[in-house]
Image 1 (cartoon, rainbow, N blue to C red):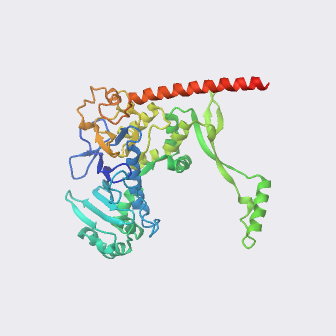
Image 2 (tube, rainbow, N blue to C red):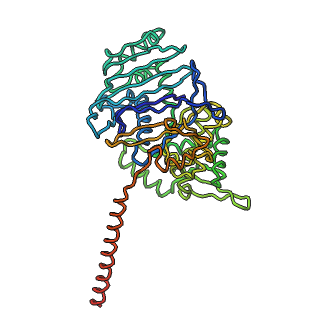
Image 3 (cartoon, rainbow, N blue to C red):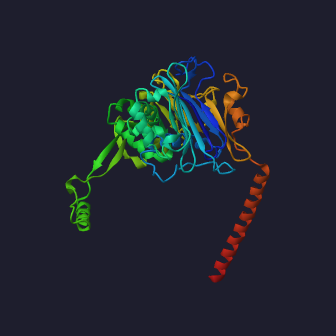
Length: 455
């Protein structure tokens, strides 16, 4: 479970902003989960709303970047290539470190893990645990080098040499958790695994997510994936991959070309060459039959749903965290609401999976939405006069989820987080449109007159 994520000095986020998934109210009808060692419970879903360019996606990108830093800073980042971070550039904080921190549950134990880094190196890193309800320091790092790392008793005891190896192998621009997992350190690998299991859905990884869905449609999750296809009411009966043989002329042409380019290493047997698999979508017809259509003929909404099915099934069946950028993109509000509902209800989310998303779909704040969000599940991003993003919880406002029309209040600007339109600019736009329209009409008349004169 994810309990909290905070970030500072990243993209449009200057000051520290915190997103919490700890329930503030009692929810008997939601798939909430107990937080070990406390009387608190974790929410299954939170959504972030706000105007364009207010920082909604930057919050998701910050979480995605921090996850990637844990996974790849030791194994894939160039030792001399810096940290790839994006600081807040609209002020004097660009040279200061960016900070990321997580509270989460892994294997029944609560952890707090975080790090700070500048453009070139890691400046701080820390890991604490609460194995018996009391905080225990596992390690603290005050700089980029191995000598800046202090190991706590919980990390030294039982892991002796492996902890020392992890510390010695860390680089200035790599995280200790990343280095420790590369060396199979048991406890650091456990923390690493939590990050590796967090799913992130963005436009950037849509092809990878589609491939995952297609793999699942041929595996043990096929029945569940097929049910989700039907659930969306897209008229799809089945989706499959078909291998295609290359034309013989093309095989001969490329085989000969490869031999000429590299005569010392002949190409593999051309008989084994295949074209990229083709995605075929079957649609049910009114007479009880099926019609096959190529994937390219499907709507963008169908593409989006197919790309989502794999990561949704993976999260629900394994009890994992799924983070989605622009949940409502190309999806009908009812379908987006039903997706939220899958994570919200205990019947469809028995393992406590969590969904974190941003969206413009404010119908999710309506009591009539399939995926209605309560006041402690909704957050808003607002942009200040200096261009920085502020994250505000709906529960900070005086609202009554069961009585207030939250959609109407949101659209009227009661919670901020909406675009503001200046009437003066609207009038100037009208004047300029009129001016250009008149100029275009005059130009058209002159053109017609010239053509008549020539003829």
